[in-house]
Every structure is written in C-alpha cells, then in structure tokens.
Image (cartoon, rainbow, N blue to C red; front, side, top):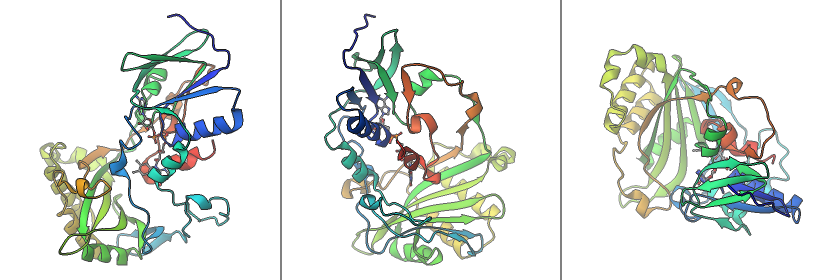
Length: 347
Ligand SMILES: Cc1cc2nc3c(=O)[nH]c(=O)nc-3n(C[C@H](O)[C@H](O)[C@H](O)COP(=O)(O)OP(=O)(O)OC[C@H]3O[C@@H](n4cnc5c(N)ncnc54)[C@H](O)[C@@H]3O)c2cc1C
C-alpha cells in the first residue's frame, strides 16, 4: 500500500461516541493548528440511536441510589443533590452526582464537529509512515495516529489485542425492560424512597437492580412508566440445575419463567419479592410498538447472560505504535457501575 506523508500530522478518530467526541473537542482546543483531526462513525446520522434518548427529567425524580437488604432495611443511600451537565464546576460535595443525559451530552459534544457518518471501520493497517483506517464501504483513510473510540465491541481492539483472556466472575444477569402501571411504580418508589437507582441485595448472592424513569407513558386508563430491571444470581445454580437445559435463551417467555423460579428459590416471600414477581409477569415477549409512540425505546429483547470481564493481566505490555484505544474500547465498564463516561471525563 502506498503511504503518503502528511505535512500537518493527522489524527483519525473512529467512533463519535462520548469518548471520540471528547477527544476531538480536547484536541481542537489544545492542539488546534498542530494537527488535522478527522472523526468517523458507523451510524448514518446523529439521530440513528434517537430511540434510546429519554426526555429531560421531571420535577418528581430524585436522582439517587438506594441499596436495601432482602427485607427492605436500608444499607446505603447516596445523599445526592441534582446537578445538570452545565453545573459540573461548582460540585464540591463528595456524594454529589452529575445528571447528564447521554443524548444531550452527545449533542453538546457534536457542536462544530464534522463527523463522517456511515463509515464503519473494519480494521487498520500500520505502516512505517502512518496508519490506514479501513472501512466496510471499501474506502480507507490515512493518518499519523489512529484513535479507536469505537465502543465495547471495538473491531480495532479485536485486531490490536486478539488474545484477551475472559474472566468469569460466576454471576448471571437477566435484563428486562418493562412498562409498568402507575400504582406499581408508586409501590416501588415507596419502598425505595423515590430513588431512581434501586438495589436490593439478597442473602443468597442474588440482587435486584432496577431503575425507573418517572416519565409517564400516558395511556387512556392509567399512566405507565418504563422500568429497567436486572436480576443477578450465582451462575453455579444454573450449572447444577437439571431443568436449566429446558431454558431457551432465545425465548423471552422461557427466560422470564426461569427468572421468577430463581427469585422464588432465593428470596423469602415479602413485599418487594412479591411486587417484583408481579412486575415480571408484565414483561413483553415481543416489541409492542410503544417505541413508535414515545421518544424512547420501550422494548429491548429480554436477555440472560453470564457477566464477563477482561483479565487485565492478559493484555500485553505497553508498546509504541500508531494505534490507541479510548473509552469502552479500552476498558468496557459494566453499565451497573455507572463509571464508563465518568472515567472519560479526565481526557
Ligand atoms: C445502560 C447504560 C448505562 C450507563 N450508565 C452510565 C452512568 O451512569 N455513568 C457513566 O459514567 N457511564 C455509564 N455508562 C457507560 C457509558 O455510556 C460508556 O462508558 C460511554 O458511553 C463510553 O463511551 P465511548 O465513546 O467509549 O463508547 P460509545 O459511547 O459506545 O461510542 C462508540 C461509538 O463508536 C461507534 N462505532 C462502533 N463500532 C464502530 C465501527 N466499527 N466503526 C465506526 N464507528 C463505530 C458507535 O456508533 C458509537 O457512536 C452506561 C452504559 C450503558 C449501556
């Protein structure tokens, strides 16, 4: 492959997510005139993922996390004040949180950025003089440095570090989005004192995690709310369970039934357990079409997955090169930790 030599060095960024855009803005602010910066994304436009966007907060929402035990006893509650994305500077409180809506943050970061949309990167080739980013439309782009900010499934990472070892922490997670009526939302909010991020730790290594947006999906009978629910339990239970063979992970109904059985097995009866089982029985097994009516996604396929992590010791030593990973491409964070974007803030 012929390799041109750039007069002004060029930085290629693959991925116009929070990481790639933050890097772009930072490079423009601090390195302007010294570098050309080009940014590419596989999406066809910034609106591609709009269905995941959620409206701005409603006054009733309390952006806090609350952790309770199986019986509802308080274990931890963050004394969190609400700040929005424009109020990062005055934050002084240890427990203060920044409420940044991803679609708003992304819009802010997109300001003045000429993203080349519809460019899906499939790999790269390094040469002596530079690096080529290769795209699935058959085109390629030459630069001096390539930033792989292409998210959790980064093809750049897969090429750069092909032999990562995966750690299995022995935890299975079932993730379900459910649209619930107001009376159930109220019951849940009462148990969790209005905190929108809700944990309940069981005594058998299991946990309920839910988060609820207090955004009514107005139906003629009663307002409805969207709840993200996850149930975590030890994988060993599935391994030892003969009936596990009968669970079909491609069949949402089968996964929900299995989850309810696990909950009944691991949680003693009680207000929260009974409410969660009632809520799970409302889970939809296919897309109801709500997403078309509302500006946020109301259905994602129900999933049972074993949590996985990358063994950091399987990553080879640092080396010189022209390709760098950034953000989730380098250190995918479990969404539950709520840390991925926070780690990027230091760019
Ligand atoms: C449900 C959920 C909740 C979360 N909550 C929090 C939270 O509360 N706090 C927090 O700090 N973090 C949170 N995170 C994590 C945070 O969103 C991520 O860490 C952050 O978005 C990572 O930014 P990124 O730019 O590295 O990747 P992304 O934001 O995923 O961006 C990657 C970009 O690369 C593009 N791309 C992918 N493949 C290619 C390709 N082959 N070619 C070209 N472009 C490509 C994608 O279209 C995308 O635009 C959450 C994540 C999830 C899923």
